[in-house]
Length: 215
View 1 (cartoon, rainbow, N blue to C red):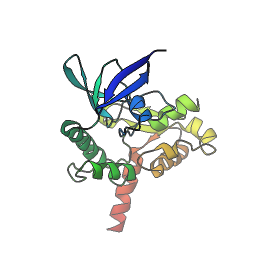
View 2 (tube, helix red, strand yellow; view 1 turned 90 degrees about the horizontal axis):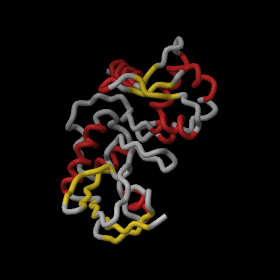
View 3 (cartoon, one colour; view 1 turned 90 degrees about the vertical axis):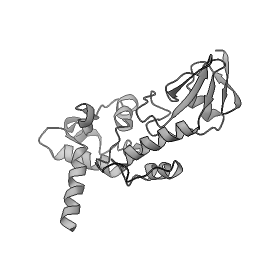
């Protein structure tokens, strides 16, 4: 397999053919933030926090570093005013869903994100898909999946499978970039349901009820 020479943040980088920009950057100690990436899973590109700017043959464009393959003589910028603004806006949108997520709060502070910019729609889930993909690709159990589409999309544990395997596993809980509590609650709700999958919106409903009870 031949090596590919490219430039990342002004540094000459030698990468193996088939690597992504994210992998090439990380092997050189160049930091690119991610929320939906896991080295043991197939690239997904859901969060877009890893957006970088590339230039090839005089043409510049934005791509997801976790998906885009290395190319010969490619020039890559991992930070710029444009990139930082994109990441800032993405983080502000995600913070509306998971305002207390340590990972989001830390990244938000780095990029100057305003956690109050967008109206709160707390679901505690940013649809990174880590739990779904880990259960499918690594564990081969498919105990958790997505339901619905668009703004109603959410994750759900499948009661028939989850009730048999999840309590002894729980490996996906630590992958959640927002809170293991969300995953635990969805699991409990799924097992307690009458055979119908219960999704992540249930946690938001429980949270709102708790706030109302305390007021």
